[in-house]
Amino acid sequence: MDTRRPGHLITLLVVLHAQLWFGRGSVPKVARMTVELEAQKQKNAQAQLVNDRLAAEVQDLKEGLEMVEEKARLELGMVKPNEIYVQIAK
Image (cartoon, rainbow, N blue to C red; front, side, top):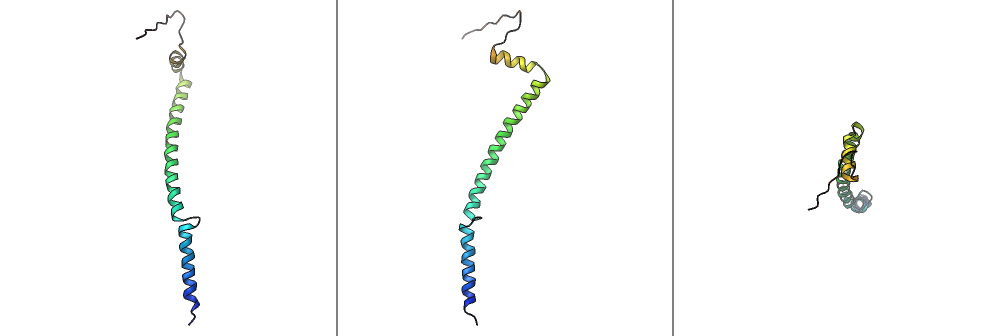
């Protein structure tokens, strides 16, 4: 009976176990990457919401001048001809 075989088997099991905990695809590394993936998915979802809002605004701007006029009035203080601007301070 060859006595080296159990030693080889144990060595192989030790190497495989070490790879499981310390190698490229180790359990801790996979767990950390899973957390990072979830965080990135959340960031992507937030960015998608911003993109959707901007796309809707672009569509509104393409469809009519009402949105342009509203933005000009609110952000730039636009006044139409023959219109009087009155500001009331509280």
